[in-house]
Structures are given as structure tokens and as C-alpha cells.
Amino acid sequence: MTEPSTTRENATSSEQGILLRGITKRFGSHEAVSDVDLEVYRGEFFTMLGPSGSGKTTLLRLIAGFEVPDAGTISLRGVDVTGTPPYQRGVNTVFQDYALFPHFDVARNVAYGLRVRRVKRTEIVARVKTALEMVQMTEFATRRPAQLSGGQRQRVALARAIINEPQVLLLDEPLGALDLKLRQEMQVELKRIQRQIGITFIYVTHDQEEALTMSDRLAVFRSGRIEQIGPPSEVYERPASEYVASFVGTSNVIEVPDGRAVLRPEKIEISNGPRTEGRTYAAGSVIDVAYLGMVTRFSVRLDDGNTMTVARQNSSGGSQINVVAPESRVTLSWDLNDAFPLTSHSVVETQLGVQAKGAI
Amino acid sequence: MRLSRFTRGGFAIFAALVVTFLLGPLLVIVLFAFDKSNVQSLPIRHWTTHWFVVAFNDQAVRSSLWLSVKAGCAATLIALVLGTLVAFGIHRFRFFGRDTVSLMLVLPIALPGIVTGLALQSAFNIAHIDLSIYTIIVGHATFCMVVVFNNVVARLRRTSSSLIEASSDLGARPLQTFRLVTLPMLSTAIIAGALLAFALSFDEVIVTTFTAGAQNTLPLWIFGAIQRGQQLPEVNAVVVFVLILTIVPIAYAARISSGERSFGSAESK
Image (cartoon, rainbow over all chains, first blue to last red; front, side, top):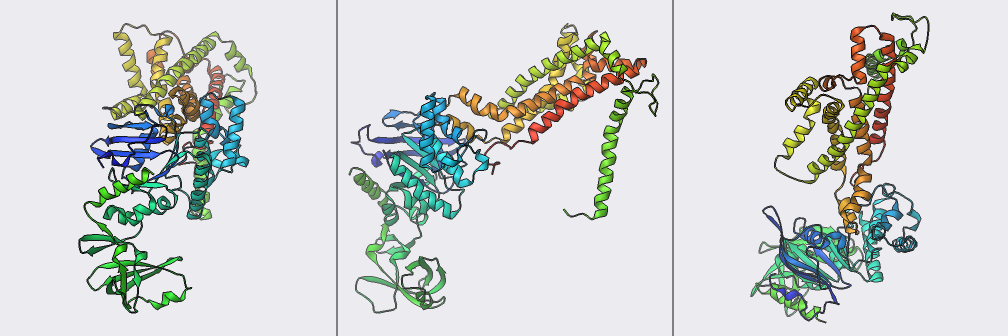
């Protein structure tokens, strides 16, 4: 992504959130972030998605000011902050390990940002109270971090960051250390808080499901570069590359007349009935059936040797599962319109699509 | 680990023997310090605190004690500043020769005292520096610095760097971060290091022998008195005093460095 086509050229500085231009960061000979252009809009929930080592955390640290880029500029609401130290940026971070100060209790942790800025004592007390209420931690104000559970520490870390009313809140895999149930609760909670305070959130995760459910837009990272930016539905439905298709959700790559295309598991039907006009059919045998609760996932080896993953909703009770047993012969069918072609142009097309959407 | 009763009993006896071997001699000295007799032999017939009075009124003891305290405090102060700074430097920065510097720092404590002492004396000679309290302080600071350094660097290694980043992220200037986060996190390590350093300095003999001029520190006075063999009861009294003065800070240092929770969120889970 060397062209700044993902940014709104007509955006004024007041509606601008963060603008990154040509950001490159090297550690020794390793290039962690390579020439990244990115704009995050004001009030947006933006997710940076990618496997570990893809550069998303480094980019977050660059925005926070913990690292200085080797090339490129970072601006915040139209102000260049590339060389500004972290303590002078209107940005706050929720760290992956929470980084709560062990020698302060919850209230003093939350008050820290105001205290170092010499905010008046009475105001600090009031704002700490509000912040703790927002994350429902009021009753724990006098506890030390060591006396809290992971989820509670998470909430304190969040309160400690948002009390400063930053222009942008950076969250570095904030839910990574929590168990599934707590993680889902916190996802809802984070969205609620973000809507309530209207701050721009930049969220780093390697969990594609989290990225899809929470984001207004997301960027998929691959070895220091952004592979695709767009709203979740677009990244999912129209992946720019095989990499994006495989990283975001499960996908099948099929051969179509003019190349290769991505076909999502839920777009494929298992049908042994009469054939309809306009659909593509392929026969094969089921090699694996996995019941996942909401859906059942089938792996089918087609007669041409390819393996396809098919998802079927468990809408009519459990009886359906038994219909298709492992080893049984099935016919798969799909509509070619549901397959999103992977052409060499598709990256550019998606970028243009994002630009069009961004301008709305 | 599950041990049979027999094995456990065996270990208990062995442990008791080791402790007796280590602490028994100290106990003997403490006992003899209260023995009225000039000639030390068991059993003790008459108890007295007379020797403590004698020691207290002995001008030589007093001046050597005062010298020891001054030298110990000064050496500890130097060790505190240098040891902490060096620990920061070694921990924070990667530079050419970092491991060598690390090794050289701990060398004074690894080398035999006689080598350090002799080396210092020669150096002072060559530089035409007269031996005085200042040369004692310099000599002590060499190994006192090591214990401060070791304590602080160990704490720094256990401390998550994201705490410093979090502080900066929340708007604290570097000095505020140092005062509000770094220093509180290191404080117990620094205090423990200082107490150990003082205790080390206070009972040091070998290096002091080479770096002290005409003056005696308390250990040197004890050493001399034992060699002359004329004031043994008084020596016992002084030793008991030194014992208490050394044990208290060491016990306190051990308590504050082990009783607390370690810093850094990775460990506080």
C-alpha cells in the first residue's frame, strides 16, 4: 500500500483522527513495519488484525510514542506528533499486561494521569469516581492490583486510560489474557464504553472473530504491511487476497473461469436433490463432521482432489447432523456470484471501495 | 516431596548440627562477654556487665567505633549512588563491553580481600595519597557498590518495563516517572542493598588493613587486641556489640526484600 488511496483527501483536520504516512520501523535488519499509510477517523472503532509478528503491535507503539519511526509521519488531528514523546501526546494505552502500578491502589492508579498533570484534588476525586463507575469498579477503589482478578485489572486499566479523555485510545490485545466468557462480556462492555465516550479506539488483536464483531473498520496486517482495510463485512465478503481470506474466517479457494476465487463455507449447500439452473455442482465424500453448536462444519473431499469446508446452520434441531455421516457421498452446490474472485486487481478495487465508503 | 519419618528426622538432626556449628561459637563469645573472670573457662562462675562498661569507657574502642561508623556510612552512600546508577546503565542500555563492565563491577567481591587491599594500597602509594579515613572509604566502597548494584539490577530485571511506559503514556514526564514509579519500585531493593553494604563495611578487616593509616576501625582494634591477648574480656564485650549492630540491619534487609510481593504484573498473578 504505497498509494495514499485509503485516506480521504477532502477530510479537514478537525474530523481527522490519526493519519499515518509512509511509516517504516526497523529493528536491526528486521523491518517490522514497512511503508504503511493509514487513516483512522474520529470516533471510530478501528482494529489492527494480524498474526504475531505482523507489525500491528509495533504500529500501535509508534502511535503511542514508545517507538520512533525510521521513516514517515504520524499526525493526530492534523498535528504532526512524529517526534513527540508519549507524555505529550493526546493518546492513552491499555496494555496487554495491564501495567497497573503495583504500589498504588485502584483509585490512585486511575488518578495517576490527572495527578501528574497537576489537576486539582477535588476534580481528581470526582473524575476518578466517574471513571470507576463507568467500568463498574467503584467498590474496589482501595484494593491493590494484586488483589484483583484479570477481568477487574482490565477494567482498572481501561478506567486509568479513559479518565484522561484522550483523543485516541490504544488497546493492545486487551482481552488476550481473559477466558472466553469474560472476553465476550468485555467485548460488549468495550463497545458500550466506546459509544458512551465517543473516543477513537485503535484495537490490536490476532482474534479475527473479535475483530469482526467489534470494529467499524479493520486492517489486516501481513509481515509489516496492510493487506486490506475495510469494514468487517467487506473484508469478510470481499477479501483482497488469499491471505486475508484465510486469516479472516474460514474460506475455500476455488477455480473459476477467470482465475481463483474465495468461497465462504456458509455459501455452500449440501444438496442431493434436483439441480437448479445457474448453480455449480461438485460431488465428493465427507471426511469430517464437526458439531460447533450454532453450525455444523463438514470437510468434503471432492472427486477432483480439492477439500472444501462447508458450514450448515443447525436450524432444525439435531436431526440434521445424522443425515450426513462421515464417509457418505454428497453433492455440493454454490452460486458463482457468491464467490469473490482473487485477481491481481482485487487489492486496488477494494482500496477504491474503502475510499468511496470513507467519503460517505 | 514425600520423605519417610526416618529420613526427615535425619535431616532435622543434620540441620541442627549445621546451625550449631555456625552459631555456636558466637554464643560462646556472648557468654564469655558476661564472665567476670579474666581467664575464660567454662562453667562461668560469676556473671557481670563490667566488661561492657570497660569497653564503653575505653577511648581506643570509642574512636575506632566512631571511625567505623563514619567510614561505613560514607562508603554506603557512595555505593548507593554509584551502584544504583550503574545498575540503571547496565539494565537500560545495550553497549559494547556491557558484560565486561558487569563482571568488573562484581570482581571486588569475588577477588580475595587481600588482593583488593594490596592493589588499593599500591595504587594509593603510586598516586602519593596518604592513607586516611578517605582511603578506607574508597576501599570499602569498591565492594559495597557490588551489593547495591546486585540488589538493584535484580529488581530492575524483575520489573516489567511496561510500567515505565504506562507512566509516560499517562502524561508523566521522565522525572515524575522516576519519582512516582521507578523509585518506589526500587526502594526496598536500594534499602536492602544499603543495609547489607553497611554491614559489610562495618566488619571488614582485610581491605581495611591495607587502606587504613595509623587509625583503627573497630574490627582492626579487635584484631589487634586479640593478637596482644591482654584485653580478651573487653574484646568479647565489643564483639557482642558489633554482632548486634550487624545482625539488625541484615535481618531487616532480608525481611524487606523477601516479605514483599515482587513487582511487575507478570509476577503478581
